[in-house]
Image (cartoon, rainbow, N blue to C red; front, top):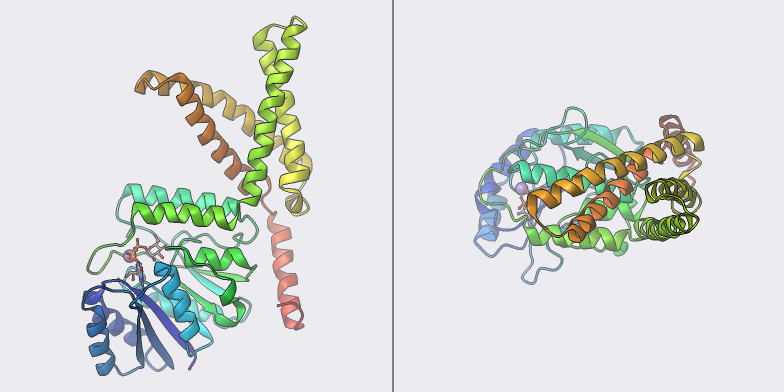
Amino acid sequence: MDLTIIVPTYNEGPNVVELLRRIGAVLDGRDFEVLFVDDSTDDTPAIVRAAAAASPFPVRLLHRDRPVNGLGGAVLEGFRMARAPWCLVMDGDLQHPPEAIPSLLERADAGDVDIVVASRYAAGGTSTGLADATRTTVSLASTLLTKSMFPRKLAGCSDPMTGFFLVDRGALDLDALHPRGFKILLEILARRQLRIGEVPFSFAQRHAGASKASFRQGLRFLTQLTALRFGRMSAFALVGGFGAVVNLAIMWGLMRLGVEYVVAAVIASEVTIIGNFLLLEYLVFADMRAESGLMRHRFAKSFLFNNAEAMIRIPVLWLLVEATHISAVLAAALTLIAAFIVRFVFHALVVYAPRRSTRAAAAAAARRRVRLGAER
Ligand code: GDD
Ligand code: MN
């Protein structure tokens, strides 16, 4: 058997038959199985059993009476039970079109990757099936934030939040995975540096039934992110906090020397921006310096960004206070938090972005190592 298709399901009864029909049509002639890992509270298991009995290819069902760890836990269970070395994970509601499966298999056949991600955000992919503008925005923003927390491990992946991917089970350390909630792919990619391939796909509308995504899932996702990677971001926050204190100290000192307060504020800010940059270079992003080009280019980007940020934040603060009548201090806190996140994303993804040439060189080196049978 060369492929196990793992489908996590939670009350997806009306989608089962159509899903199997379309999978069967695309994979005709291949040796594969479909494994439903089901946590449903309705008649989905009975529907799967009936469909399995009538199916020309093997269909298995694992129904969990006491589900643990939701969608991610279900997928992990699927990896453990799979009969084939390569596992394809897809949703049961046909938002992941089975017609895209051959392109994933083909990409894996090239032999230079451990995982192939079906991406909504790669050139040629679309995410129009996302329910509304809010979900689209949330999805894009959380993708950016996630990528900035794992700038290296996710460098080759434009859509770490997708639930549609093909993975070599042998490349995973199943015992090291701690799936919390919806984002199992993120868990996989964040744990270990895998060689990632991507193919674009168009995220479709749900075939039948309702989405199980919820605000609670969103919160769980944030917990997952924090648990996976608090390191870099907290170091970044520490540097920022230290910078703020130094900024005020310099301003106070200059004013005592008789410097006018606006001038003092400007000098203090510029000194802090430069000091913070050095701390980022040698503390927070030290491991990424070698691959991200020239220090003076990084400095220019960081310096311009911080000055632009200061110039934008003040009018935004004013607008916020005038328009919503919340207290000025609360508004300032909100703009500072927003600025902090944007600044972090900008530094992780732009200032310290690996240069294309070094990234290609690293990928080539990884391929050579694998061919020589070293490092796995
Ligand atoms: N076994 C099991 N247990 N399956 C579940 C559970 C659970 O607790 N919760 C959801 N599922 C199944 C659903 O039945 C469906 O097959 C799949 O997981 C995705 O759930 P949806 O309710 O369709 O969520 P979605 O469309 O919002 O999320 C999808 O899109 C995201 C990208 O925006 C999923 O593919 C996510 O993995 C993906 O990140
Ligand atoms: Mn869905």
